[in-house]
Amino acid sequence: MVGTSIRGSGPTSSKVDSLLVDASARIGSAKVPAPVFTASGCAASGKELDQFFDIASIGGIVTKSIMLEPRSGRATPRMAETPSGMLNGIGLQGPGIADFIENDLRWLYERKVRTVVSIAGNTVEEYGKLARQLREFDWLTAVEVNISCPNVESRGQVFACDPGASAAAITEVRRVLNVNTPIIAKLTPDVTDITSIARSVMDAGADGVAMINTLLGMVIDPDLMRPVLSGGTGGLSGPAIRPVAVRAIWQVHAAMPNLPILGMGGIRSGKDALELILAGASAVSIGTSIFNDPTAPWRIQRELRDELGLRGFASLADAVGYAHTRYEAEL
Ligand SMILES: Cc1cc2nc3c(=O)[nH]c(=O)nc-3n(C[C@H](O)[C@H](O)[C@H](O)COP(=O)(O)O)c2cc1C
Image 1 (tube, helix red, strand yellow):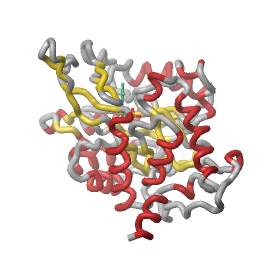
Image 2: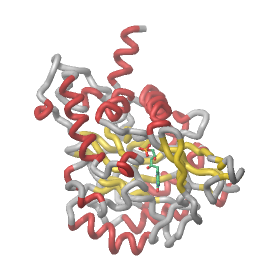
Image 3: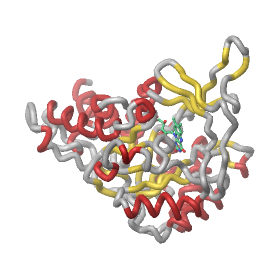
Image 4: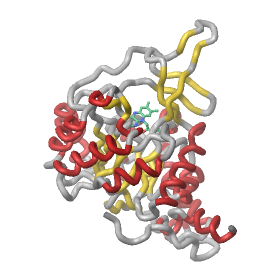
């Protein structure tokens, strides 16, 4: 685990040329030269984005959560617009881990893209089987463990809502994964105390946390007078959830200032990304914004550098959690 504090020391001058800002970032125990990643499920494996910008130039691609077997996901409709956001009920559609390794992972490796593979299981054993299949790929930047999945062995209760189940999934992944591959646990904000979940996964061997996943929501069509999504409920994302992300990141960073956080939730601009970093994120992921601007990760990475330079930060690391320092100084 991480030993020293990762809280940033603040700006070093009134303004720094953005080209001189050191934008390298921490994600789990890995250091990457750039701080912006895609968010799982919002850019598949990055192939489609590669026509809009060089995907090897951003922090990396976080792939869509992959499960053991192929899945067709839920029936349509599985997307609904909401004020300042969207609701999705895709249901983890995907080709299964074997096909993913053969096609997507191979392509990402050949393309030299920093890659975080997101895995999702229905049981602790499934998480272990997925991790075992990834064990040989020691070039991965990290494995993100999406624990926002129903645990079929516990009446369908979502792993990430229970500290014990969350820890069990991470312990199993740590047990079988290559020791050099960092583990990032992806947390849901749909809990009373997100710090207790973060602590349990950290104690179980996670090198960092990714937060936040979508919030559970529902949209009802007033004309049809029934839920819009085929599955009834879905995950809320986009700018509407950014204050929830900022709050959750703030709480986890305050409780565990040494735990690297990959922050996400409604980031649309470099300024939005900076907000999550000031709360305590050490790198960020871009999700829903990609749907209306496929260049968003690349654009936001450039904007973030400008925002840091404008505020006199010589490095991104100096800004991590800095709002805590300012806030505490004024109390
Ligand atoms: C269409 C869609 C699919 C998603 N699929 C996944 C997924 O497979 N695994 C996962 O961990 N998160 C998934 N997410 C959640 C995102 O990775 C992210 O945590 C969330 O959307 C908040 O970020 P945003 O507001 O920038 O989209 C998905 C989100 C959307 C909108």
